[in-house]
Amino acid sequence: MEEQKNPTLYDRLLKTEWSYYTGAVMITILALCLALFSGTWGASGPFFTWFGKFVGLFGIDTDSWAIYNGSLGGYKFFGNQASMTDIGLLVGALISCLLAAQWKIRKIKHWKQVAAAVIGGLCMGFGAKIAGGCNIGGLFSSLPQFNLSGWVFLLFVFVGATVGGRLLRTCFEPPVSNKRPNRKRLTAEQRKQRRMIQIALGVVLTVVVLIVSFAVAPSYPKAPGIIFVGIGLGYVMQRSRFCFTAAYRDPGLTGETKLTRAVIVALGLSTILYFGIHASKYGLDLASLESTPGSAVNLSLVLGSFVFGIGAVLAGGCASGTFVRMGEGYIQNYIAFVFFACGAALGEVFNLATAGTFFKAGAPVYLPQAFGGLMPALLVQLLVLLALWVLAYWWEQRKIAQRNAQNG
Image (tube, rainbow, N blue to C red; front, side, top):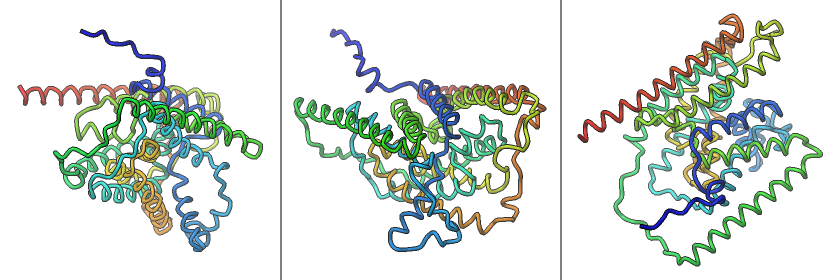
């Protein structure tokens, strides 16, 4: 019997998948660095602007549209944190795949994948726009800052993802094919050559990004840091297979909750870190708090997070996940991205049409105000997250027991 070789340093750092919990910790740290350095992490915001800019390339004055109202003229890519972070996600995932020599084009295998990408992208864009953010800005960057809107988003995106999972399985799941794809068999020498080419491209891409980042630094001093964090987030999410959409989808679709529990851990760690930030900013007794922070809790938030959850499952990734999977070479997610941007424009039309109506009625709710200080809010939030972690673990064990009984 041959002895198994110990993994090399290259394998451990660049090729072997990381655990979900490793991804959770590193994503939390990177997101906090971004918040301290530049501002809270958000992902879906630029899609609406990019849609207007793209349509404007065809000679259409989109800046005069009511939904833009002259806002496009002042947009600058290197002056927009979310734009740089989003492209950083894509580039980081691409670098991760290249350095591991694992990049390839993931083709569309059935028309149902296209339909799911189109409908899912539209739902994500529409939902994120009317909810005031996707699962990054509306949940991951909101809930740890003790905003009730983050908890509302979590509840309804989970419900939407459950519905999306049922739709995916019943309407959009491609039929199983027994036909093996015709793939050209490569020799050992060809495989080695391809591996070296990918690694070289990964190194070159990294150097190019460094050069561009520091080249724009005189005009945009924060750009290098934001781009590095974005690339770091993309790299970590790709290497650890960390996916927010799967965390909402898997409990109802497969019964697995490993990723769900990792997301809960990330939310708990972020809560503790933001507690320190808010305590220094507002005081434990909120004596320095002048206005209620956070997003409004209203029907638009409920509807938007629900629709977003459906769309993320159908499209195969949320806003951040879409960029990571684009970096991995998934054609389906490129299609979803295009319609995500279209859906964001439709969402802004809805926002204008419903301004001042019951859809927008509501106000921010800051939990430390409701619980009488930051310390009680911290304890309550951590206890609820712990309860959700235990519930998720119990749910997975229950599903495993049920499957074992059926197979028994």
